[in-house]
Amino acid sequence: MPRAALLEWEGREYDHNPKDADWYWALGIIAVAGAVAAVLFADYLFAVLIVVAAAALALHAAKQPPLHRFRLVENGLMIGDELHPFERMTSFSVLEDIEGKLPPMISIKTESWLSPHLVIPLAGVDADAMYAYFLQHVDEAEHTHSFTDLVAAWLGF
Image (cartoon, rainbow, N blue to C red; front, side, top):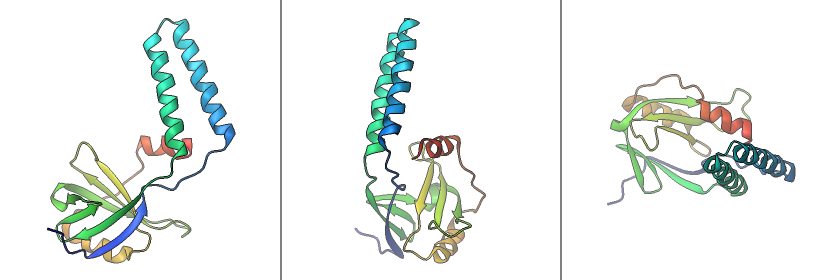
């Protein structure tokens, strides 16, 4: 049974930053150097792991992120057809760009081990209404960037 949406919008998981040829060359050189070093130390499995990881990273960098449909419903947040209930959320924070160039985002910490940290763009939706509704159901806390967020930003993701 479909749930009635209080707010509904679409957005991408992250902004796609197209990589130029130099980025792929650098990735390939680093991967080959790492694989050669692993082979020199007779760690063949690590050499294979480096090559596979570099290939996966290159494929991820080349693809456009999918467009997701977000819906705020009475008992949680739906991403596509998956419900993230308020009961499984530990805290939230609305992140806004000081310069106003980027749309606001909502950062949600959950109890789920598969998706413990959700960062959802709020482009095309009233961020104040979202904040007010979340404040009634989930504790607000300051969220800082995780180590993986910083590494992804450093790599250009």
